[in-house]
Length: 225
Image (cartoon, rainbow, N blue to C red; front, side, top):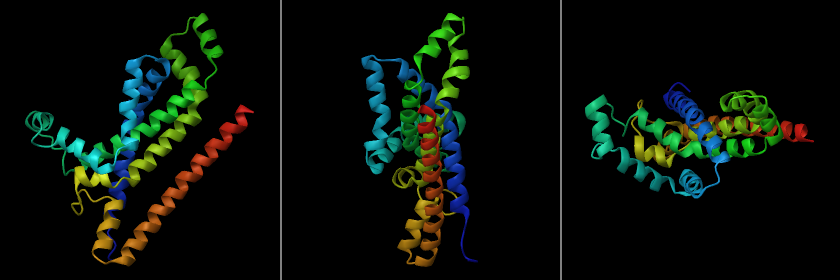
């Protein structure tokens, strides 16, 4: 136990927490917009947002490298203007985790918003409530379990990402090496004891996430009856 480096665990938790927070700030407004919109543009936008779920992680990582790499227009602009380098940094790991996890939050939140009884919304508009007030006082409280499930899924996906993070952030020890990458490196090095310990930690976290999701689903089902 003395030679176990817990940096990958702490980095993974920090990356997953930061990516999840960004997913909440970005994903919930997008989910609300997609729920209200039925046009072709919204459908196309929804398709693009769903791509990270079906694309292979290496393909998704390649796209991010092309978009954010030091030789790209955006990458050079960020480096020259803000002295910000994305690739092979913890920031790159956060962006990779955000991209792979945010579709799960958007899908879950959009479904939860769609299940809100429109009668409540019509009554609120008749009473003169603003759309912002309706969202925070009616829609979000009624849909919070679906939103919470999406947040939990996003955190779990961000915590467990391997391929995209490896492509964008690399596996630099004590800098960008997250838990899934540390497990992979331990196996490559033949250190099965370390790999087993890291796997147990990740499995325990995954079981906790699934338990939370199941509890939220059961509570939501009981309330709908």
